[in-house]
Length: 166
Image (cartoon, rainbow, N blue to C red):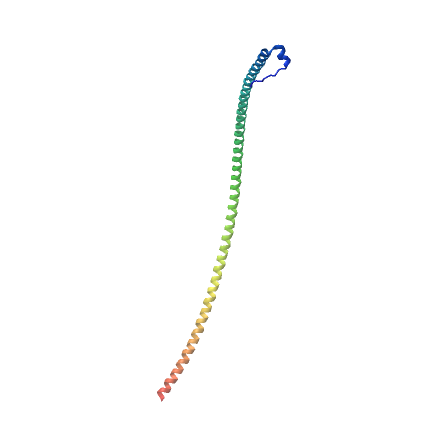
């Protein structure tokens, strides 16, 4: 974009309009050249800056990848150690719980055996008492039956004797 230089009237009067216009054109061409050179220099510097930036970004990316890989390895190792520790502790606690449960089951089985023995003794006592009561009831029943039978026979014999006599 050309810069149009406006020069003072005195300048035009002393040099003349042709020379002054030629000088303005020369300034414009020098300005265009400088602008072109400056643009090329800026593009070159930007290209260098862009290349350095890309290189540094690549280095940072590589550094981050290495750090993340180390962190990942450490994390995996610590998680494995933690998992092994938890498995060991869980196994120990599970074994302790199994032992307690076995002990409780043994105690309960012992109590059931005691109750079973008590039940057997109680059952034997009750059966003995029931048999004794049953024997007594049978004897009482036989006495009553004999009493009713004897009474019935006497009454029947009296009725028969009265009928035959009559």
